[in-house]
Picture 1: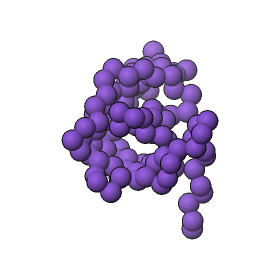
Picture 2 (picture 1 turned 45 degrees about the horizontal axis):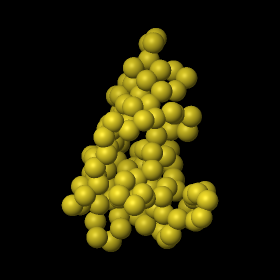
Picture 3 (picture 1 turned 30 degrees about the vertical axis):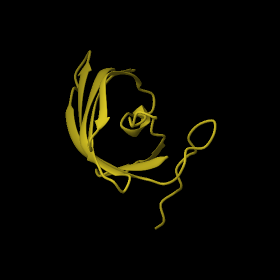
Length: 118
């Protein structure tokens, strides 16, 4: 299991399991309520690359993830989000997400993250 935290205002702490092939769970990069499919995923030789094509109640959202992971079980990635909404309000956002291994994944799924200490 890993915990990931975005480095933008209004941090969000996420717990996610890492698949046997090294890919990170979609919940690491997407918003609650998004329904996503992977268009490509790569996690080898210290590199992470992932494209998620998502839909939500406003329209389509594309997440492009490009980053690195280290031997200490941590990662840092640049995530570029682009929206394609039917009306006004499209945006492009680039943020940095970082995470680290916090333990084994629990049986039956991911437990909610612990609240950060003040």
